[in-house]
Amino acid sequence: MSELCRNGQKKTGSCSSGKKPRQAFNRRSFLKAGVGTIASCAAVGWALSPLRKMNNDLSLDEFLQNHYSRLTPEMMDKILVRIQKEIKRDYGVEANIRDIKPLNNVEYAYALNIGRCIGCRRCVYACMKENNNSRDPAIQYIRVLQMDNGSLDLEKSEHYYNPESVPQQGKYYMPVQCQQCKKPPCTKVCPIKATWKEPDGIVVVDYNWCIGCRYCMAACPYWARRFNFSKPAIPKDEIISEMAYLGNRIRPRGVVEKCTFCLRRTRQGQYPVCMEVCPTGSRIFGNITDQESPINYILREHRVYVLKEEAGTVPRFYYFFDK
Picture 1 (cartoon, rainbow, N blue to C red):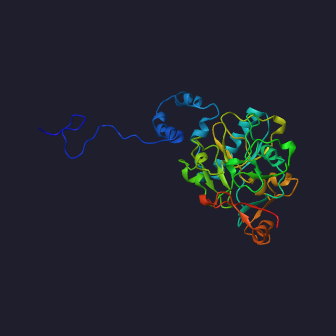
Picture 2: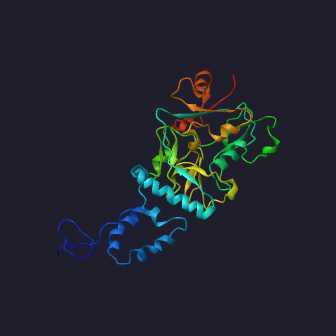
Protein backbone atom coordinates (compact mmCIF):
# COMPACT_ATOMS: atom_id res chain seq x y z
CA MET A 1 0.00 0.00 0.00
CA SER A 2 1.27 3.43 -0.87
CA GLU A 3 2.17 5.64 2.08
CA LEU A 4 -0.20 8.58 2.37
CA CYS A 5 0.22 12.10 3.64
CA ARG A 6 -2.10 13.47 6.34
CA ASN A 7 -4.38 14.98 3.73
CA GLY A 8 -4.89 11.59 2.07
CA GLN A 9 -2.73 12.33 -0.97
CA LYS A 10 -0.18 9.85 -2.15
CA LYS A 11 3.25 10.57 -0.70
CA THR A 12 5.72 11.51 -3.41
CA GLY A 13 8.65 12.82 -1.38
CA SER A 14 7.11 15.70 0.53
CA CYS A 15 3.69 16.30 1.96
CA SER A 16 1.65 19.43 1.65
CA SER A 17 -1.38 20.31 3.66
CA GLY A 18 -2.68 22.39 0.84
CA LYS A 19 -2.55 25.44 3.08
CA LYS A 20 0.00 28.22 3.15
CA PRO A 21 2.13 28.36 6.31
CA ARG A 22 1.17 30.93 8.91
CA GLN A 23 3.31 34.04 9.06
CA ALA A 24 3.96 36.13 12.14
CA PHE A 25 2.68 39.67 11.87
CA ASN A 26 2.20 42.79 13.88
CA ARG A 27 -0.60 45.30 13.57
CA ARG A 28 1.07 47.07 10.63
CA SER A 29 2.05 44.01 8.61
CA PHE A 30 -1.46 42.66 9.19
CA LEU A 31 -3.03 45.72 7.66
CA LYS A 32 -0.53 45.97 4.80
CA ALA A 33 -1.05 42.32 3.91
CA GLY A 34 -4.74 42.95 3.44
CA VAL A 35 -4.57 46.30 1.68
CA GLY A 36 -4.14 44.75 -1.78
CA THR A 37 -7.25 42.63 -1.37
CA ILE A 38 -9.31 45.38 0.23
CA ALA A 39 -8.31 47.87 -2.46
CA SER A 40 -10.14 45.77 -5.04
CA CYS A 41 -13.40 46.46 -3.26
CA ALA A 42 -15.49 49.42 -4.33
CA ALA A 43 -16.13 50.54 -0.76
CA VAL A 44 -12.56 50.69 0.60
CA GLY A 45 -13.41 53.18 3.32
CA TRP A 46 -16.33 51.07 4.50
CA ALA A 47 -14.18 47.92 4.55
CA LEU A 48 -11.47 49.54 6.62
CA SER A 49 -13.72 51.31 9.09
CA PRO A 50 -13.83 48.45 11.65
CA LEU A 51 -10.05 48.69 11.98
CA ARG A 52 -10.42 52.13 13.46
CA LYS A 53 -12.12 50.57 16.47
CA MET A 54 -9.27 48.16 17.25
CA ASN A 55 -7.64 50.80 19.43
CA ASN A 56 -9.37 54.02 20.40
CA ASP A 57 -6.07 55.92 20.23
CA LEU A 58 -4.87 54.39 16.94
CA SER A 59 -5.90 55.92 13.64
CA LEU A 60 -5.77 54.31 10.22
CA ASP A 61 -2.94 56.66 9.27
CA GLU A 62 -0.89 55.25 12.16
CA PHE A 63 -1.47 51.73 10.91
CA LEU A 64 -0.12 52.73 7.51
CA GLN A 65 2.83 54.73 8.84
CA ASN A 66 6.31 53.55 7.85
CA HIS A 67 9.16 52.82 10.23
CA TYR A 68 11.02 55.94 11.37
CA SER A 69 14.11 55.01 9.35
CA ARG A 70 12.06 55.00 6.15
CA LEU A 71 10.24 58.27 6.64
CA THR A 72 10.98 61.04 4.17
CA PRO A 73 10.81 64.67 5.35
CA GLU A 74 7.47 64.98 3.56
CA MET A 75 6.10 61.92 5.35
CA MET A 76 7.28 63.23 8.70
CA ASP A 77 5.66 66.61 8.09
CA LYS A 78 2.31 64.90 7.52
CA ILE A 79 2.74 62.80 10.65
CA LEU A 80 3.54 65.86 12.78
CA VAL A 81 0.48 67.69 11.48
CA ARG A 82 -1.67 64.66 12.27
CA ILE A 83 -0.35 64.35 15.83
CA GLN A 84 -0.77 68.09 16.44
CA LYS A 85 -4.41 67.82 15.37
CA GLU A 86 -4.90 64.85 17.70
CA ILE A 87 -3.42 66.77 20.65
CA LYS A 88 -5.59 69.77 19.86
CA ARG A 89 -8.66 67.50 19.75
CA ASP A 90 -7.85 65.59 22.94
CA TYR A 91 -6.21 68.26 25.11
CA GLY A 92 -7.19 71.61 23.59
CA VAL A 93 -3.54 72.67 23.17
CA GLU A 94 -1.81 74.04 20.07
CA ALA A 95 1.29 71.88 20.05
CA ASN A 96 4.41 72.56 18.01
CA ILE A 97 6.03 69.17 17.35
CA ARG A 98 9.36 68.82 15.57
CA ASP A 99 11.55 65.92 14.60
CA ILE A 100 14.75 67.21 16.21
CA LYS A 101 17.80 65.36 14.89
CA PRO A 102 21.04 64.54 16.78
CA LEU A 103 23.88 67.04 16.61
CA ASN A 104 27.06 66.06 14.79
CA ASN A 105 30.06 64.86 16.82
CA VAL A 106 28.08 64.81 20.06
CA GLU A 107 27.73 61.96 22.53
CA TYR A 108 25.90 62.77 25.74
CA ALA A 109 26.68 61.45 29.21
CA TYR A 110 25.46 62.16 32.72
CA ALA A 111 27.19 62.12 36.11
CA LEU A 112 25.53 62.36 39.50
CA ASN A 113 27.20 63.27 42.78
CA ILE A 114 25.57 60.98 45.32
CA GLY A 115 27.24 62.82 48.17
CA ARG A 116 25.32 66.00 47.36
CA CYS A 117 21.89 64.63 46.48
CA ILE A 118 19.43 65.31 49.32
CA GLY A 119 16.52 63.28 47.96
CA CYS A 120 14.18 66.24 47.46
CA ARG A 121 12.73 64.69 44.25
CA ARG A 122 12.51 68.03 42.46
CA CYS A 123 14.11 66.30 39.49
CA VAL A 124 11.26 63.77 39.45
CA TYR A 125 8.51 66.37 39.25
CA ALA A 126 10.35 68.62 36.77
CA CYS A 127 10.91 65.60 34.55
CA MET A 128 7.21 64.75 34.63
CA LYS A 129 6.28 68.26 33.54
CA GLU A 130 8.88 68.60 30.80
CA ASN A 131 8.02 65.22 29.31
CA ASN A 132 4.24 65.70 29.46
CA ASN A 133 3.86 62.59 31.60
CA SER A 134 0.51 61.41 32.83
CA ARG A 135 -0.39 62.77 36.25
CA ASP A 136 -3.16 60.28 37.04
CA PRO A 137 -1.94 57.63 37.15
CA ALA A 138 1.44 59.29 37.62
CA ILE A 139 4.24 58.13 35.33
CA GLN A 140 7.72 59.02 36.55
CA TYR A 141 10.96 58.35 34.68
CA ILE A 142 13.21 59.03 37.69
CA ARG A 143 13.24 56.97 40.88
CA VAL A 144 15.09 58.40 43.89
CA LEU A 145 16.18 55.63 46.24
CA GLN A 146 16.80 56.24 49.93
CA MET A 147 19.78 54.10 50.97
CA ASP A 148 21.47 53.29 54.27
CA ASN A 149 24.93 54.82 54.56
CA GLY A 150 27.56 52.31 53.50
CA SER A 151 25.07 50.13 51.60
CA LEU A 152 24.94 49.60 47.84
CA ASP A 153 22.15 47.03 47.95
CA LEU A 154 19.41 48.47 45.76
CA GLU A 155 17.03 45.72 46.83
CA LYS A 156 17.01 47.15 50.37
CA SER A 157 16.43 50.76 49.29
CA GLU A 158 13.33 52.76 50.16
CA HIS A 159 11.33 54.03 47.18
CA TYR A 160 8.45 55.72 48.96
CA TYR A 161 10.05 57.85 51.64
CA ASN A 162 8.64 61.26 52.58
CA PRO A 163 10.48 63.89 50.47
CA GLU A 164 9.46 66.61 52.94
CA SER A 165 11.66 65.16 55.66
CA VAL A 166 14.96 64.81 53.84
CA PRO A 167 17.83 64.40 54.14
CA GLN A 168 17.53 61.91 56.96
CA GLN A 169 20.46 61.08 59.21
CA GLY A 170 22.24 57.87 58.27
CA LYS A 171 20.81 57.90 54.75
CA TYR A 172 21.95 58.87 51.28
CA TYR A 173 19.99 59.21 48.04
CA MET A 174 20.49 57.67 44.61
CA PRO A 175 18.38 58.86 41.65
CA VAL A 176 18.00 56.18 38.98
CA GLN A 177 16.71 56.70 35.46
CA CYS A 178 17.46 55.47 31.95
CA GLN A 179 21.20 54.87 31.76
CA GLN A 180 21.32 55.42 27.96
CA CYS A 181 23.47 52.31 27.62
CA LYS A 182 26.07 51.84 24.91
CA LYS A 183 24.93 48.23 24.70
CA PRO A 184 21.22 48.52 25.49
CA PRO A 185 19.50 45.14 25.91
CA CYS A 186 16.11 46.79 25.53
CA THR A 187 16.65 47.58 21.84
CA LYS A 188 17.75 44.03 21.03
CA VAL A 189 14.53 42.40 22.21
CA CYS A 190 12.07 44.73 20.45
CA PRO A 191 10.40 42.54 17.79
CA ILE A 192 9.61 45.45 15.46
CA LYS A 193 12.59 47.77 16.10
CA ALA A 194 10.47 50.48 17.69
CA THR A 195 13.36 51.47 19.98
CA TRP A 196 16.98 52.11 19.07
CA LYS A 197 20.14 54.01 20.00
CA GLU A 198 20.72 57.35 18.28
CA PRO A 199 24.18 58.63 17.17
CA ASP A 200 24.34 60.96 20.19
CA GLY A 201 23.89 57.98 22.53
CA ILE A 202 20.25 58.58 23.43
CA VAL A 203 18.03 55.50 23.35
CA VAL A 204 14.67 56.52 21.88
CA VAL A 205 11.24 55.04 21.17
CA ASP A 206 8.98 55.72 18.21
CA TYR A 207 5.69 55.85 20.08
CA ASN A 208 3.72 55.48 16.86
CA TRP A 209 5.52 52.24 16.03
CA CYS A 210 5.59 50.65 19.50
CA ILE A 211 3.07 47.80 19.88
CA GLY A 212 3.26 47.70 23.69
CA CYS A 213 4.60 44.15 24.01
CA ARG A 214 6.81 45.28 26.95
CA TYR A 215 9.74 43.02 26.06
CA CYS A 216 12.01 46.04 26.49
CA MET A 217 10.75 46.54 30.04
CA ALA A 218 11.65 42.96 30.90
CA ALA A 219 15.11 43.34 29.34
CA CYS A 220 16.05 46.59 31.10
CA PRO A 221 18.08 45.86 34.28
CA TYR A 222 17.40 49.39 35.63
CA TRP A 223 13.58 49.41 35.51
CA ALA A 224 13.81 52.57 33.43
CA ARG A 225 10.84 52.07 31.10
CA ARG A 226 7.15 52.69 31.81
CA PHE A 227 4.04 51.29 30.18
CA ASN A 228 1.05 53.61 30.04
CA PHE A 229 -2.12 51.58 30.52
CA SER A 230 -4.43 54.53 30.00
CA LYS A 231 -4.62 57.75 28.04
CA PRO A 232 -2.24 60.29 29.65
CA ALA A 233 -4.09 62.60 32.03
CA ILE A 234 -2.43 66.04 31.98
CA PRO A 235 -3.99 69.35 33.03
CA LYS A 236 -4.21 71.62 30.01
CA ASP A 237 -2.35 74.48 31.71
CA GLU A 238 0.58 72.15 32.57
CA ILE A 239 1.23 70.83 29.07
CA ILE A 240 4.55 71.81 27.49
CA SER A 241 3.46 72.77 23.98
CA GLU A 242 6.95 72.68 22.45
CA MET A 243 7.45 68.98 21.72
CA ALA A 244 9.82 66.58 19.99
CA TYR A 245 8.62 63.56 18.02
CA LEU A 246 11.08 61.19 19.73
CA GLY A 247 10.94 63.08 23.00
CA ASN A 248 8.34 64.83 25.13
CA ARG A 249 5.28 64.73 22.90
CA ILE A 250 2.17 63.33 24.52
CA ARG A 251 2.26 59.58 24.00
CA PRO A 252 -0.68 57.48 22.82
CA ARG A 253 -2.14 54.92 25.18
CA GLY A 254 -0.62 51.45 25.31
CA VAL A 255 3.05 52.16 24.61
CA VAL A 256 6.30 51.96 26.56
CA GLU A 257 7.92 55.31 27.31
CA LYS A 258 11.18 56.46 28.87
CA CYS A 259 13.70 59.20 29.62
CA THR A 260 15.49 60.60 26.57
CA PHE A 261 17.90 63.00 28.32
CA CYS A 262 15.35 65.73 27.47
CA LEU A 263 16.37 65.59 23.80
CA ARG A 264 14.01 68.44 22.93
CA ARG A 265 16.23 70.61 25.10
CA THR A 266 19.66 69.01 24.87
CA ARG A 267 19.71 68.82 21.08
CA GLN A 268 19.11 72.56 21.08
CA GLY A 269 21.94 73.43 23.48
CA GLN A 270 20.04 73.34 26.77
CA TYR A 271 20.54 71.16 29.84
CA PRO A 272 18.12 68.43 30.89
CA VAL A 273 15.44 69.88 33.12
CA CYS A 274 16.38 67.54 35.99
CA MET A 275 19.82 69.14 36.08
CA GLU A 276 18.45 72.68 35.97
CA VAL A 277 16.15 72.23 38.96
CA CYS A 278 18.62 70.38 41.20
CA PRO A 279 19.18 72.68 44.23
CA THR A 280 22.53 71.13 45.21
CA GLY A 281 24.31 70.92 41.86
CA SER A 282 24.43 67.14 42.10
CA ARG A 283 23.93 66.60 38.39
CA ILE A 284 26.48 67.08 35.60
CA PHE A 285 25.56 66.66 31.93
CA GLY A 286 27.53 67.16 28.76
CA ASN A 287 29.21 66.02 25.59
CA ILE A 288 31.95 63.45 26.26
CA THR A 289 33.53 64.04 22.85
CA ASP A 290 34.42 67.54 24.09
CA GLN A 291 37.54 67.12 26.21
CA GLU A 292 36.91 70.46 27.94
CA SER A 293 33.35 69.67 29.00
CA PRO A 294 32.38 69.42 32.69
CA ILE A 295 31.37 65.79 32.22
CA ASN A 296 34.85 64.91 31.00
CA TYR A 297 36.37 66.69 33.97
CA ILE A 298 34.31 64.47 36.29
CA LEU A 299 35.35 61.33 34.45
CA ARG A 300 39.03 62.33 34.62
CA GLU A 301 39.23 63.69 38.15
CA HIS A 302 36.82 61.50 40.11
CA ARG A 303 36.41 57.84 40.72
CA VAL A 304 33.12 56.98 39.07
CA TYR A 305 31.08 53.82 38.95
CA VAL A 306 28.02 52.57 37.07
CA LEU A 307 25.03 50.59 38.20
CA LYS A 308 25.03 46.85 37.59
CA GLU A 309 28.32 46.83 35.73
CA GLU A 310 28.11 43.05 35.59
CA ALA A 311 25.14 43.34 33.20
CA GLY A 312 27.50 44.53 30.47
CA THR A 313 25.24 47.36 29.31
CA VAL A 314 28.00 50.04 29.50
CA PRO A 315 25.86 52.92 30.82
CA ARG A 316 26.42 56.57 29.92
CA PHE A 317 25.20 57.48 33.41
CA TYR A 318 27.90 57.68 36.09
CA TYR A 319 27.82 58.04 39.88
CA PHE A 320 30.53 59.63 42.02
CA PHE A 321 31.25 61.18 45.42
CA ASP A 322 33.14 64.35 46.32
CA LYS A 323 36.83 63.78 46.94
